Length: 561
Image (cartoon, rainbow, N blue to C red; front, top):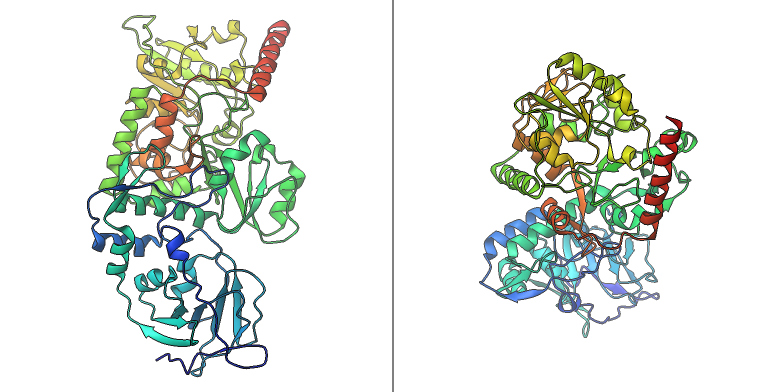
C-alpha cells in the first residue's frame, strides 16, 4: 500500500517541500480530442446536445482503443513496476519508494532534475503508455490522468500541494466518464453531422491506429514538394513533425518512408545498408481528381513495410491481409456500401465519368484493354516480363480473335508525361478502336470484359461486376475473382475471396486517405464523398505548368512518329 510516508518529495538539500497542483489538464481540454496532425484545421470536437451516452459501452471502447488525452504523443522508455508522479516542472527531485519501486516523475517541461532513483520525463506524452505499466499514479485532483488511471485500474493517490500529503482516492471510471461526456453528443469534423460518443471514440481509435503504425519513421525521401502537405498527416508519428529529407539519415536502424521511383539507386543502397526498415509509399487506388503526373497531390496513399502491393515476387501487407485476414460483418457491410457509392459516382483512380457510351459493334463481344505506363514499377514487376502495351494487345487478340477490342491509353501517356504511346497504325493492327478521350468508368460499363496487364482498371472493372482477364499479376489476381493468365504465386495466394472481402482489404483497410477540407486523415467514405462532389476550380500554377508541358510533349511525339 502506498502511503504519504512511503512517497516523499525532496528539494536539493533533502528537505520535504510542497508543490502546486498540476491539475487543470482535464478542465482546459476535452478528454476525447482530435490529434494535431500537420496542417490540420480542426483541434477539438464540437459538442452538441444529444441523448445520454451508453457509458458502459463507452468505457469498454475507450479501454480497448486507448484513446483520450494526448494519445498521439511521445512514448518514452519506462522501467518496470513503477510509480508515476505527475507533478509540476518546478519540483526538483523524487526518491525511490520505501518498498523499492522506482519513480517516474513526469513534468510539463524540461528542467526538473532527478536522482539515480527517479526517472524524469518531460513534455507531452501518451497517457496510456505512461500508465500501462504503472503500479500507482500520484497527481493533482484535477489532472485528466485520473480518468486514464481509472480506466486502466491503476491505484490513484492525490497529492495535496498545501500540505505535501498524499492520500489514496478511489476512482470510478463510469462515473468520471459520464461526467466528462456530460450527456452530450459530437459533430463529425468532416461533415458536421451528429455523432454519438461511441462514434467519436471509434474515430479517435482510427487516428490512434494510424499514428501508432507511423511511430519510429525517421522521415521521408523522394516525396515531391507538391505531395508533402497531403502525405505528412498520413505518415505522422505523433510526437514530432515528419521530416522530408534528400538523403538517408545518419542514424542507423531508423525506418524511412520512401517514394521509390524518385529515390536514386545510391540513396536506396545506403538505406538498405543502414539496417533500418524501408517503408514503401505509393499512390492509393482512389487517388485524385487529376493526374499525379500533372502534380495533383494524392488524397490516398498505400504504406507497406514489406513490399509494394504490385510486386508479386514477395508478399506485401495487402497480400497477407487477403491471405490471412478475417473480415467481420461490419467491415463487409462498409465494403458493399463503399462499392455502390464508387460505382454510382463513376469514380476511378484519376477521374469521374458517368456518361453512357454506345456499343460500336452492337451485339459483338466487346473487350476493353487499358494501356499502362510501360516503365512504371507496377508493369516492370507485376507484368512478369510483359511490359509492352503493343504486346498486350497482341495477346488479347490471340485470346479473342472475333471480339471488338477497344484500347484506352493510360492517362499519363495521353497527357504526354510518360512512356507507353503506340502509333495508331500499329495499335489498329490488333485493336478495333482507340478510345483515349472517354472515361474509364463509362468504357467499363459498356464493355463485356476487361483484359489487363496489371492495370488498376481491372480492379475497377471487378467493382462494376465485369469479367476480368489478367495477363500479368496485379494484387487482385489469384483470389478466384479473375481469369489469370500470368504466373500468379499460387503457393502464397491460396484463399478464395469474395468481392466484398477484396474491397474491404484494398479500399478500407490497406490505404490511407487525406481529407483536403479539414486536413485530417479520414475514412475511405469521406475521401470518396470529396472526390464525388469536388468541383473543377483553379488547378494551381504547378498543375497548369505541368499540363502545358504535357501538351508540348504530345505534339513533339506526333512529329517523330
